[in-house]
Image (cartoon, rainbow, N blue to C red; front, side):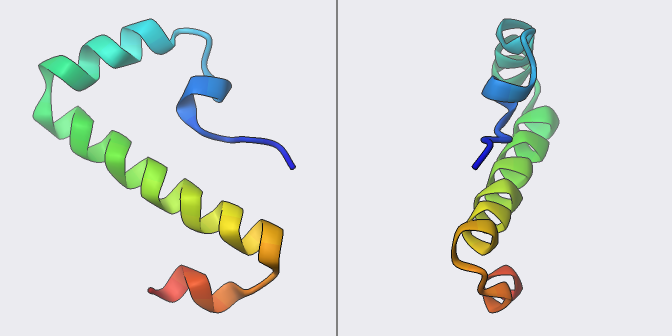
Amino acid sequence: MEKHDLHHELPEFEKIHALIISYNHFRKLFDNYNELNHKVRGVETTGVFSQMMS
């Protein structure tokens, strides 16, 4: 199963980390992405879609 977190997806993660530290809005978007990515990964590994609804 492939990982799709931003650290693995983008080689420019150092720049992203600087944005996370500097901009609260970017941090919120980053956190939302990670939360959704975690839920999608759960569905991919378990096959249980109801996990996405919580």
